[in-house]
Amino acid sequence: MSITTHDAKAGERRIDHLLTHYGQTHGHHLNKAIHNFAVPLIMFSLIGLIYAAHPVAAYLLIGASLVYYFRLSRNCFIVMLAVSAIMLALVQAMGPLRLELSLGIFLVAWVYQFIGHAFEGKKPSFFEDLRYLWIGPLFVLSPVLGKFGLKW
Image: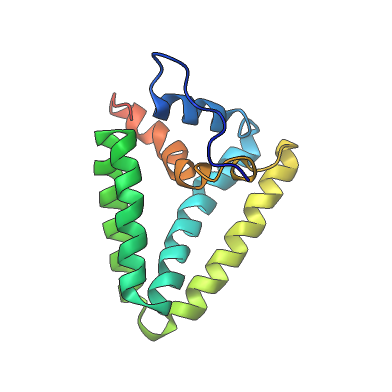
């Protein structure tokens, strides 16, 4: 897996390029629908799994992710800061069942992701570039931003 492929062309914002490329492997309506619930669940459960291992590790992952989002755009940072805060609060509210619930959600959501990609007939984007693990939540949230006339 590469972390340097598909760089933006001159004059193109990196976030726009990454979202466009991500969209090329997420065109099937069923795959999109699955992503709309599975991507947030994967993000949520990953935070939960890491928090269960050690809360500081979860905060570090969120912090590092927010640095990446900030480098993409101010709007990415603001939206993902809010999303991360909500997810972190929900993870904390899970209490002693945090590990078991997070693991179950994580596994089921990934199964659905791969089912979606089977319908799509294309492999997940992160197989070719790990950055797409962070682009997935932005892709899912893009239509919501669009309804408010906002862009990343």
